[in-house]
Image (cartoon, rainbow, N blue to C red; front, side, top):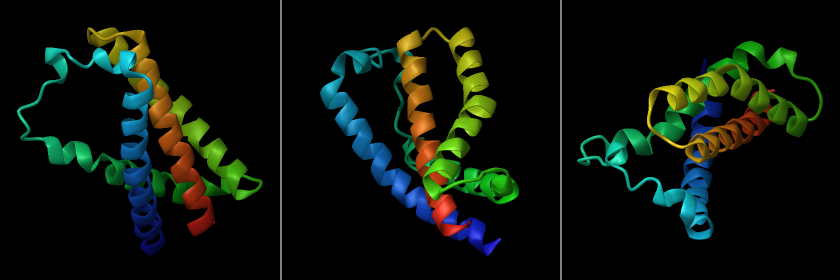
Length: 135
């Protein structure tokens, strides 16, 4: 259990920095995609902002448990194991969630695709961390 929390915290810290840095860069270099967020669906009164900022840690702890449970199925170098882990998570969990989100909400395919790529990159980065910290 200690390894799950340790690797989850390390991955969460790394994802926090990468995700918010990546978000800043994405807005800077792809502003057209982010104009779509000027939608009442995404306006918040600020009362739940902390939940948004903690998402890197929530996903990291969940993925750390998933890694610990199934790490024996991934073989190769830590980079290959991390990549494969990210792809498996994305296909098994992220793709169905993005499908239902797109079908249920009035959002564009570009938005959903950007969320999928964002989640995939998070899972790959976390997988690489897990492969190094909890082989």
